[in-house]
Length: 395
Image (cartoon, rainbow, N blue to C red):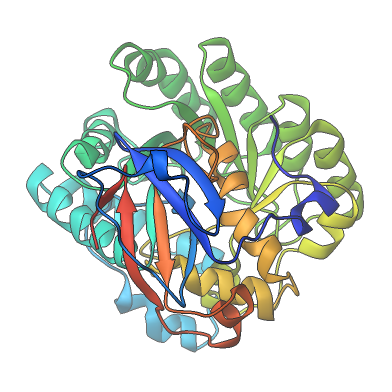
């Protein structure tokens, strides 16, 4: 199997008067009309969702879930028009969250992350990718990754990404290469050894890490067996897309200012574009990623929240889906494919989640809507009524 590319994203099998049979947390059968009598015995629990829409559990494949503090104190600056990169250059932004996260205890981070996951679950999300990157030192990065293992206690499944290269820590100002060497020589081997994360990510952006620095870190991570992601072309286009294509990164994130040439490169290299429209909205910009151009070029895309305390403080994937419709002109089917099967490929879980294929995990989101179009037509309202995780009703 492979992600849905380009025009394939407009295709879906939509069943009406349908049933889903579940056994041992997995999908046993899917069909329409009356189910096969052999599927039902005295122990079968039958639940009607008449008049509603069922989709595979939604997957939020780019979040910065674990962090200390919050950044509403920067809101007035943002409203006054101070840019995201300017706030970062003044020692705010990511660096202010780094200070708060370094000071936060494991329990404090755990409780905060658990609360965020609860919000996400209520909005229909059953799997979440979680990045570190607010420690920028081993002790705090490890604490973030340890907190992300809380999916042992939470209904939502988590997929971890190691992102110590999220910013240059204050103590390494002007010495970014030294900091990257520290990550490569000391942090990455420990992450691998302790199996703390599957993916490695870096923020390739003006004033943060250059394309060459990103290439250096990600190629070392790839040699160690990490799967790759890269924050690229979010605010300025400085070559992150080339690195993603060269190293065959699983995904490239943001892509708000990607060039036509960049789109062609990612399409050819089969890099998934993780698009984050709520970040554009939150930054009060009009630079929504050119999703339609990406599909025309044959790219695979996802939509995701970028849930984080600075550039996108939200826990509502449906909001990102609605923006995908209203601001990127994606259709309901394209959007649902983006947050289910393509997002499953983006977190390397397509064998077990992302569609209603027999044998996959029974992760199901039920919406109070008569059809798919209604999910977007009736916008900015949480229509989720039930969520099933591994066949168990959790909402």
